[in-house]
Amino acid sequence: MENFEYNTPNKIVLRDSCTYQVDTYKELKITGNVLFVTDRNLINLNIATPAIKALEKNDANIFVFDQVAPEPKVSTVREIVEFCKNHEITYVVGFGGGSPMDIAKIAAVLLKSPQNIEEIYGVNKVIGDRLPLALIPTTSGTGSEVTPVAVVTSDDGSKSPIVDTHLICDIVLLDAKLTTGLPPKITAATGVDAMVHAIEAYTSGVRKNVISDNLAKKAFVLLFNNIKTATFKGTNIVSRRNMLIGSSLAGLAFANASVGAVHALSYPLGVSFNLPHGESNALVMIPVMRFNLKKATSLYADLSRIINSEVIFSTDLEAANYLINQIESLIKELNLSTKLSDYNITEKDINTLTTGTLKQSRLLSYNLTKMNETDISNIFKSIL
Image (cartoon, rainbow, N blue to C red; front, side, top):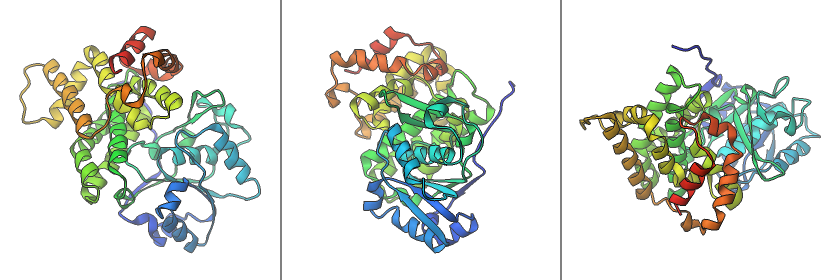
C-alpha cells in the first residue's frame, strides 16, 4: 500500500433540525462576532433565518452577508472582506449550497491572513491561519462542507480553484430537514454532482487510497439507491438523510483523491453558459465515463457489482458497461438533460467549451485517461 495523508474536518454532526436549536451552537461554542455567509434566496425562503435566530440566542452577534450568487465571482470575495472591515469577526459560518460555503471558507482565511485572494489561487498557497469555521450544507451535492477546495470565477472569467488544508472547516452540521424543501430538479442535479464526486474519486488517476476508496464506494451506494426517492418524494426524511450523508462521504473521498475530466468539462458550461454545476455534470458524465472505460473497467465493475449484487456478470467489461447504462438511464429518469441543444448550445460553441476545458489542466491531469484537445472537442460534439 502506498503512503498517503488523509485530511478531514475536526467534527461532523448529523442531527435532524440541529441547525435551528440553540443548544447546538452552545455545545459547539459558536459565538462571538459571527459572519454568517448565505444567499438571498435562503433568506427569502425563511430557511436561513431560524438558524440566525438560534445563533443570536446563543449570545452571538450576527453579521449576515447574503449576496453570494451561483458560480460566485472574485468580486464577491472583495465585497465580503470590505463588509467585515469594521467588524472584529471571530467566527465564520457558511450556510447554503457550494457557493456560500466556498465563499465562507475563503473569507475565514482572508479575514485572518495578510494575503489577498489572488495570492492564494492554486494549491497550498495560504500563509498563516484562518478564523474558526463551521459549514452547514442545504443541498446534498457539492460536498464543499468537508473539502479543502473553494472555486471562484476570476476577473478574466476563468474558474480559479483554491486548494489548501486551511479551507477544511472545524465543524460540519448535517441537518437533513434543511433539504426536504428542495425542488426536484435541484435535488436531482446536486445528487448527480455528488455521484460524480464518488465515481471520480474512486477512479482517480492520482492520490486515491484505501480510505478514499471505501468512502467513495459507500457514498455511491447511498446516492444511487436514494436519489430517485429524494427527487420525487422530497419529504422522505430517510432518503434525504442518506443523500446528505452520501454527499459528505463523496466529498471526503474526492477531497483526498480529487475529481477529473467530468468536472474539467463541466466548468466551461457554467462559466460561459451559466449552467448549474450539477446539470453540467449530468451532461458530460456518460461520455467521459465511456472515454475512461478502457482503463477504468475493473473500477466501474467494482461499483456495478456493489449495487447489483444479485446480477452475475461474466466479465468486468460487462459489469462496467451495465453500470454506465444504468447511470445514463437514471439521469434521464431524473429529467436531467443529456444534450447541449437543450441549452441552446450549438456546434459553433464547441471551440469555446474546448478552450475552457483545456484551462482546467489540474483536473485533466488527475483523470485516469489522458485527454487532449481533440478528445475534448469530440466529447462535446457527441452530446450536441
